[in-house]
Image (cartoon, one colour):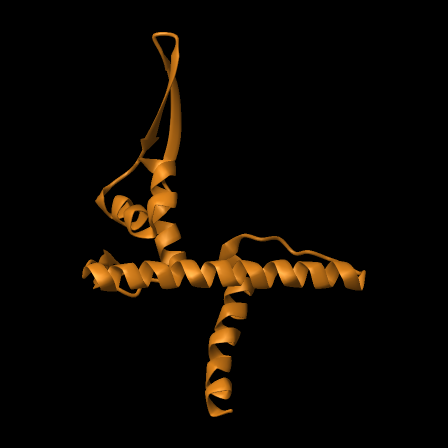
Length: 129
């Protein structure tokens, strides 16, 4: 029972994240209970995926002994996924036509972004490399 109570703060922190304005999600107004329930389920699933991805990044950093810079340029093995997303923000897919062929390249890639992608695994790598 005590463990359950102590873990409540983790759940509350997750819901605080969902409500954070930096996610740039506009307000949603629903009236029908089934729609409210459906949106709540989607939000909980989104939080679960976010939490698993953050856990995976932190675990891989710990396993490999690697670090990434935090907001104040200090190396860390416990970044938030939100911060990792901020680091990845400038990556852009560029498509160019060269010799009648479409060539796709990734722009604004650097060592830190490459490390994050590599640590997240093969499924993420296939989109960037």
